Image (cartoon, rainbow, N blue to C red):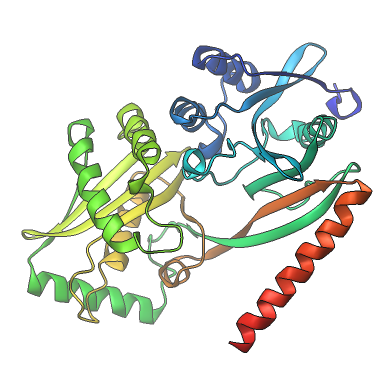
Length: 360
């Protein structure tokens, strides 16, 4: 059956349970789980449990058979209501940052995207739709106009059959070798421990201390200062440790180098978060590079074929990866005449701000 030619029926509710959510996943994906961990039952169900502001569940059906669903949060503003793709619209809830964001459906049913936008456009007081870190660039459809579209690079390693580090440049290999030698001489042999369920609480406490020290004064701060972020990952780890969630602790003698935190799905590894001890200021001390090299070798030995650093530019990602991709954060506004001049004023303000920043 060609679902593209058949009208999509939409229903929406705020009354749903985790058990009903699991049934939805079973209906849509049958024996096949979503390839994307960030749209999996594990991620979405734990986000919903931890979120204070409950998003609306929207389901898509064809001939009374559910083909997809999505969660949409809403926030009221002076200009109207803003709708968020798989986010609640509350900053604390959404610091549990989603990537590879999309409607939750099988690949052949991606026309659910336009059905979603048509549905939201009919909402009273609708103003804007926001989808962060989406897989595709083009979300716009007839009732909407583009407010902004920002792309961000993501980096990954397509692991070769020969070696997990075969693609490293000569300079990267030299830095890793030099750092490994320095760490061993300074502290002792480097060891990696893949933690089990009984070590989660202690690991999260140590990770929090290190991460807050490193990122606490950063523009976006550390998620570990947000109880919702901590509770989300604690629950996620308790449910999936060694199965779909993994924490590696790296030590050299009595010295803690830090932690790496991963998700896995199929043959793919997602590197989500690090908490690295950078107290040694010697320029030979590059524990992050050493830790990722060891983690890459570990996952290759288990048969994984892709190691994804996720979105965001960083020197270590470009040094260690061999593939670059894009994720898109889109903002659309409802195509009404009185929103257009507001959009132009926003553009003007952005240009003036950029000009003054350049002059400064």
